[in-house]
Length: 339
Ligand SMILES: NC(=O)c1ccc[n+]([C@@H]2O[C@H](COP(=O)([O-])OP(=O)(O)OC[C@H]3O[C@@H](n4cnc5c(N)ncnc54)[C@H](O)[C@@H]3O)[C@@H](O)[C@H]2O)c1
Image (cartoon, rainbow, N blue to C red; front, top):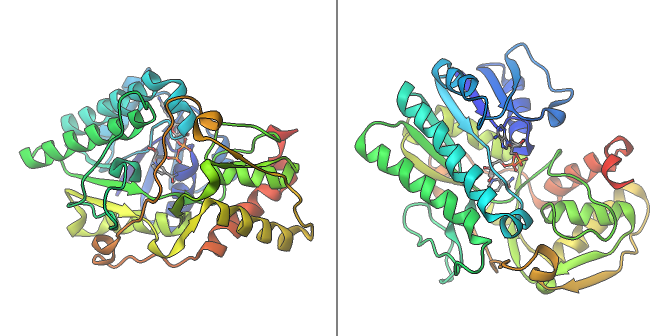
């Protein structure tokens, strides 16, 4: 199959390319504004094109025409951007993604759209999130962090509408906290906002800076190993029953609180380096850490029965997920952003 990946230079994209190069089955061309995370990932079946989907429209369109399947990973995916620049988020995460959808409609190319587990929004019932039956509950407009989930939700609804009309072959993926090598980036000691939680904790362990526990650190999340996520992608790409369907990709067995995660990562750090962390723990409100307009979910529990029914199951546990990701960032050549 010929696969075009938009946003190939990011965390999920670079790991997906590594996986597809290892498989060596499909021909892959990826486009992004940056390829720094693709360093060292090479294969006869992979080609990178530097370009911006918003301005290099001819290239993006030609790539969609060439491909049998388009994978759309383009988005701002960090909560601080949702609260600082909500209009930039809707521009990229909705309008630029709509362009890719339009190319897919024009050339009748299959679309594999990465959405988010955040479309489920606030948890109003003590249940796992199920793709085709759970309600999607957004917070108020004045909490602008929901613009990320709202943009993705509208995109999903339009994609589904085309599926119903019969003019689009699609699969929508809702990722639940993928973690692994190349996840986000390191930040200097004491930094607030910016990347997602793993990056803050691993940066603190490396720099010796404080560990910020946002809103007390009692929130729960289920994490997913990026390799499990890439294998789930292959199942969705190849299984005949995955067409015109929405899938959670997550691991229900890795639930942990943010306070528990900080402790667990500290333990792994000690085992890997022989040094016990002595970081100060600072409790801070979500608005002080990410900015005004931030709100959080207490739990985001995935139900993955739909994907299990196609033969996929997550295989890697919490220790596996974080050991590999921490080891990646312990390499001194990855410390440029914190010195
Ligand atoms: N990582 C997760 O656990 C997670 C969770 C929920 C949703 N998602 C979704 O999965 C997708 C990928 O996430 P990620 O973690 O790899 O994020 P990422 O930020 O690492 O990757 C996004 C990539 O898109 C590229 N990009 C942005 N604008 C572009 C443009 N105009 N033209 C070309 N390239 C552009 C960026 O340069 C970046 O490399 C996003 O849609 C995100 O919302 C990821």
